[in-house]
Every structure is written in structure tokens, then in C-alpha cells.
Length: 333
Image 1 (cartoon, helix red, strand yellow):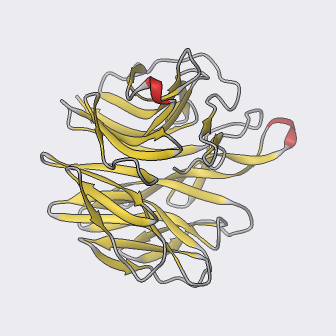
Image 2 (image 1 turned 135 degrees about the vertical axis):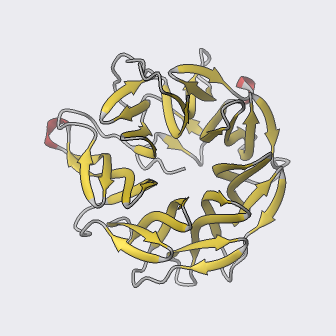
């Protein structure tokens, strides 16, 4: 998934949670909305297990005997809770989703695959990711390949609007550089830009407009696209990586990381929210490196998940040093 400072050695399948010293949990007192967060937590036998939290209360998912699992994204219809992620088994990552804790594996585990997003449309469950180097999504467990004239591609996000299915990601060009692309109902639409390296990390639909967020010029320029037209948010002088996007009217919010001065005066990637291009750091100068992963809105409130909890309007709620969080979903009462 996105974690640039995520302590995951994927090739060795060694996962450590609590990459930095945490502070005590501060439970949310928001009574107007239920806050669902997905990620993973450390068990007593030092296994990382996929977990989701509802208003700070954890529910563990998956099989603790497998060794490692994580839930990268989450949605809820107010009754059922759906989380998507991966299980690591026999040196292979298995794409998986859970409905109210019941596990559905999306491959047989013979080849490595990944999961990056989940969406609902009525009773249909859509999960996006990659399988054997090809961008895919699964609809109710049935795999749909997203083709393009490329040797390698990946799907990083999915959104549904009515009967339309939007998937954002990247593909590898013959020169080895990645390029941003999205698919609308399976039709590939490469995004035109002049940079050598670009990618889409998240996608959302607001009214009839499709918004995507990611990077151009390697990881230097945070960028969002509205209906394919890019808006470059940062100047490219230092790393800025947006991983999540949310839209409210004409306001565009992005969440991710940018270079900031942290503990000991060291430049590190710290959690950042951009509103219409204006950045706000979620962590102060005395905080260690941090990583905002996803963003959601409720009225005037801005929720951002990452590290071992989430922020609401800049105020942190942490789930403890044994947690890592990725996805967020809000259900108003």
C-alpha cells in the first residue's frame, strides 16, 4: 500500500508495527458519526493481524496462525462492515476481503497479488488491486482484468458512481517509468503529462466529476486531476506524496506526506493535509516521521487516518503503538 515509512519488508514478509513511540489513546467523543478505520495490529505472538476499529474499539480479522495480514481499506453501509487487504502465506500475498469478519479470498495463493481499495454498489462488492503484475478488480469475487498496452500495471483505487466503475493506478512504460492511468468501465484512459514518472493513488466521484490524486515528476509534485485535467499543488522542490482525496463542493482536500523538520531538526516525511493547495502539517516539529494515508469529510470536520490512529481537525486519536492504520470510512447517525 502507500506506506513510504511503513516498516514493512515486503520481500521478506517481515512486518513491524509501532514504528515510532506512541502516546496514549484518546477516544473520540464524536456522537454524530461512527468512525471506521482499517489497518493491522500486533498479537501476543508477534503476528500482525488485519484489524478494523469502530470508534476506537478493535475487531481482529483473518487467521492469526498465518503470520501476517492487514486491511488496507474499509467501507460500511451502516449495517455491514467490509474491509479489504491481504494475507501473507507461504511467501505469497493473497487478496482478501472480510464482510462482518467473514473472510473471502480472491485468489488461490499460487501467485502474489495485492489489494488497494474496496467499494460498494448496492449488494455488489468491488475490490481493486493487482494480480501477477496486471491491474484488476474483483466484482463479488470474479476477477476483471484492466488491460493496457503495458508489461506491468497496478490498480491503486476504485470508486463507483451509479453503473460506472472508475479505477485509478499506473502502468510501466517501455523506458521503465510509471505513468498515471485510470479506467472507466474497463476502458483505459492514460493521463497526459510531461513528467517522466506519475501515478494515481486515490480516486473519488463528486456529482459527475471524477477526481484523482497522485504524483507527477517522481514523488516531487503533489497533483490532482479533475476529469483528466491536472492541478499541480506543490512546487517540486521536495518530496510531497498525496495518498487520499475528498471533495466538498468546490473544495478539494488531499492527505499524504511532505518533507518537514521533525525531532532533532531532521527532515522527514510528515503527515500533511492540503485544502485547495494550502498545506497543513498534522504533526509538530517535535514529532517523529508520520504518514497520512486516507481522508474523509463529515460536515466541516476533516478526518485523516495514518500511523497508529487518525486525526479529526488536527487532533489525534491513537490506537496504541501496536497498531498501523490505512483506510477510513464515516457513517453518520
